Length: 103
Image 1: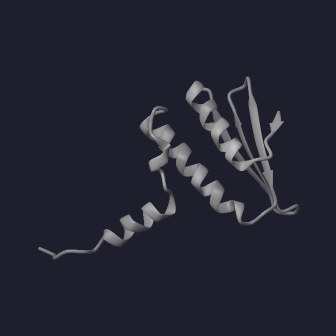
Image 2: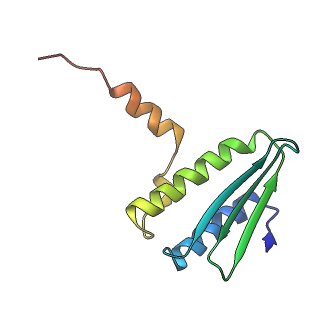
Image 3: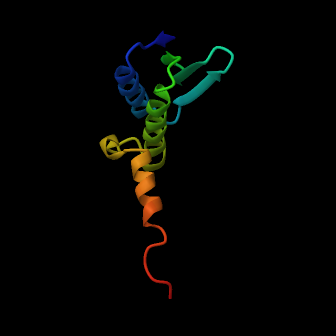
């Protein structure tokens, strides 16, 4: 198991790991409330990457990583992840609902 210190490196290596073997890659989140620690783990049973944090601000980063993995899992491993923006995109879609005339 390798604990990665840099968030950007963890995301980059996790995406590479998923693209290498999408059927065998797992993504696990573990939160320990008593310690206030969040551990993210990505593994394909050959390589295991972990990122540990106790910062509340990293929750937004985790949300973006979740969106990246959702896009990779639903659209395929060759999708361009630069277009995955996360919460802003969902808010725009919510704002579009209800506009227009009823018929």
